[in-house]
Amino acid sequence: MEVINFSESNTILNSFIQEIRSKDVQVDRMRFRRNLERVGEVISYEISKRFTYQEQHIKTPLGIATQNIISEQPVLATILRAGLPFHIGFLNYFDHADNAFISAYRKHTSQEDFEIEIEYLSSPKIDDRILILNDPMLATGSSMVLGYKAMLSKGTPKHIHIACVIASREGIEYTKRNMPPNTTLWAGAVDDELTAQSYIVPGLGDAGDLAFGKKE
Image (tube, rainbow, N blue to C red; front, side, top):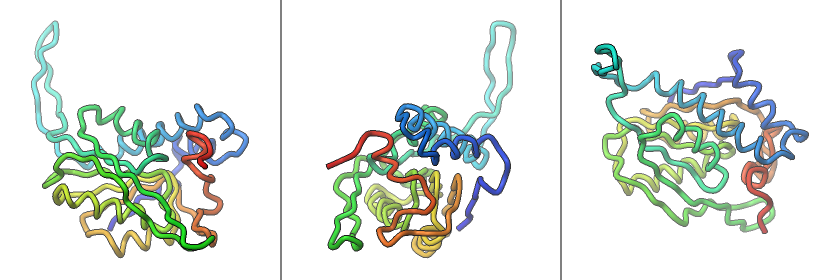
């Protein structure tokens, strides 16, 4: 599995992630959601470079222009609820894409131990299609892997792109072990530590709560 860590390069993306991480900026929920969206847009642009293109002729008011256009649209999948603003960033760029939504949550068996439960899936068929599966945080990697396995009920994609804002090294290694080789992982930044409760450190906190408010 190929892993792309955007923080290894100096780009404007680092500024968006800096604001996403900052507890002083996080108090502005609209700004937080928009920054997640912007990271999704940047990653979408980079992923689009891997697609297949075909030549098209476009009639303008003054003549004919030739342009290379994406030959197929991906399926965009996200894990609710934290993934919604991030997902919108992908949809802004792949605006003709089909969409899939996965509901996953942590079912705690103790204060530190939990299992990931998949409750809901809405998806088109994904046989022989490009699947972009996004979630802001790749902590243990369990939600992402189980989300992908749930998607297999809709077919087998020809390539999988996993996109996250921040990943832990442990989560990346788990994903490598449990995803097929035709997978590319795109991370805005990679952090080294997970807490006993499986939160990424330094991370950014709970992306869902920061985007939409605390849950009870």
